[in-house]
Length: 209
View 1: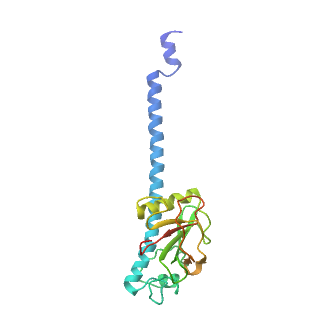
View 2 (view 1 turned 30 degrees about the horizontal axis):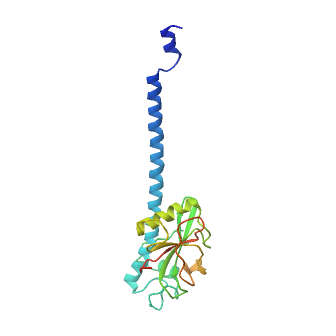
View 3 (view 1 turned 30 degrees about the vertical axis):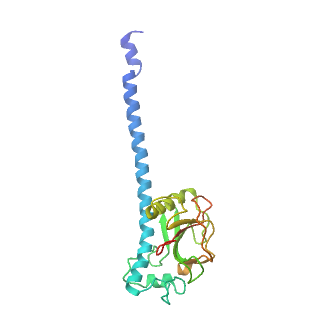
């Protein structure tokens, strides 16, 4: 076989190296793009969660109480959070659902539920924002935990689920009233590291835990 025929038969080592470099660049760009998309989704979730918190502080600023705190004792639970928030024209609505407001943050196939309540029974203990996978607070999946941990990092600077204002709860709230956007623990939930056994993100939004 002549040298000319050999060159025509396939790629040279230099050409193969160039092709491999190009493939590597393409794969790197795809992976980087996937990371950017994942980060953008996590930020959207965090911002949506904070919007719910802002709605409560805005209500407090205008009304002198939190939504769901009719007797103004500083504890959510003796009123109706949904009625208060949806009836407040001064609040930038954090809820979804258009004509029928719902307490959700939708991220692709996941519709996280947002509840307000306390950690020692209705109208007692410390106020909470509780984020669940659904209306009954079933365990989070590994995919859902990506968003949950991102929220923990945004508030506490770390995603351990055990320290700071945001903690993991291994049990669903004892009382959940989805029609009023409220949920209450009968006793303070035990902070637990994030895993697929966690039922709820518990955020002490107005006082240190």
